[in-house]
Length: 321
Image 1 (cartoon, rainbow, N blue to C red):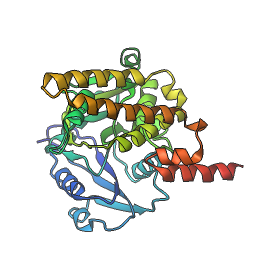
Image 2 (image 1 turned 45 degrees about the horizontal axis):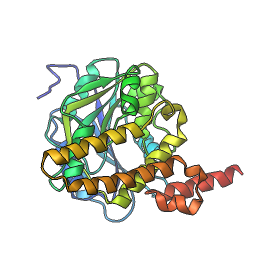
Image 3 (image 1 turned 90 degrees about the horizontal axis):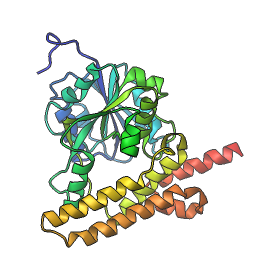
């Protein structure tokens, strides 16, 4: 157990955007309240859309809730708002469906910040019990058992994975976060990777902390995966200063190849058909997203998992005109 007597503690706040939170949110809050590392505040930004578990957020006075409308939500701006409500040295961004595996999550995640060169750090994501075989392997591919640290020199070897960081559970040193300009104020996706890339550019480092574990996975349908990859590619197209130097396609090909080998190895080669179909949908979404500026607006809306974002973009464009 970490105590103030045995080490100088950094102040830590947790930030959680919420939208129609379910049972995993309740479990997340309960486990955060039992963490070995003291948490100063848990800041929940709730997008109003029906019932909200006020009884859960009422469990402790350190939990603060601010409500916003769906029109106000943005992946970057909403998290910036929450950081503005914090005065902590380290802010930890989480999603409402990421459940700490144990009470050491924050302690393990924060430990790397004893190194003053670390600007951000992200946790290992483990599959839940309902996760299918392919997604389970994808989790192990993206979140291996061994920790590592990335800096600007990692880009040549790792490509786009040098920028990888996930706000499912990621910590940021506030001083460096502010130096990097905060999260991008208008983001359809990837606000976490853009921040990590900017920190690397400033000379700081990004740590993957395998010892810090959250349970988080999805069994996306082909269409859901296509839409997700469409939004991911849009974010890359919108920030060429960050992503133009690196390619994503080679990492995707590597994942498909290694996943197929894994399915053969565990005696389930018939699942390769499912893998190929799902991968084709992923690539289609990515290809369309990269070229979204050439597509008609109605097709863009159908391809995106966040149509509200495009309505807001259109309104801002009309204001400029």
